[in-house]
Image 1 (cartoon, one colour):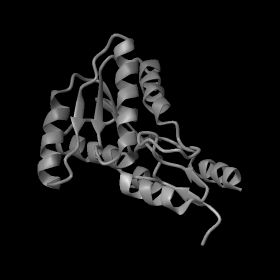
Image 2 (cartoon, one colour; image 1 turned 180 degrees about the horizontal axis):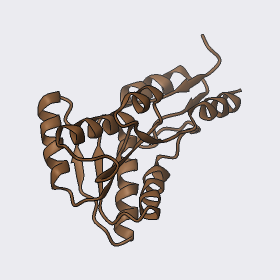
Image 3 (cartoon, one colour; image 1 turned 180 degrees about the vertical axis):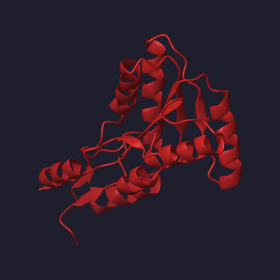
Length: 186
């Protein structure tokens, strides 16, 4: 009964339902799923390259990325950090998060972090992964930020401020995206 929809589409099923409404739709999430709707959202393709440039400006020559596979756009973030690091002539190993068993995951992540050459800049594709990296570093007795500099994405205030040490994060323009999407829908 609405006049339009601001959508954050996660899968093909939702996409089909949105198309079936015949209402105007503004997509605010997916850039991976093929859809006919105007898109207003975060440009995930620049996040990783900005993090890589930040680490390079700080003089890092060792890099790593912690991947979350729960959303398609996290792959864009990963791919751009990998591309930027590779273009600069460096490697960037990737650890893929496994959400099925927390303790096992943290043990594996801690072991992986121990093996990284130090000091290293670690990009976590979201703040939850960044929080996990900081926990695993603590478990592995790895000094942050002296041995590992960790940067997340999304600037989730609760996660960033409760992490120990506090998590640095790329701030996204979520509120501006909402206003822009509503203006376009109007």
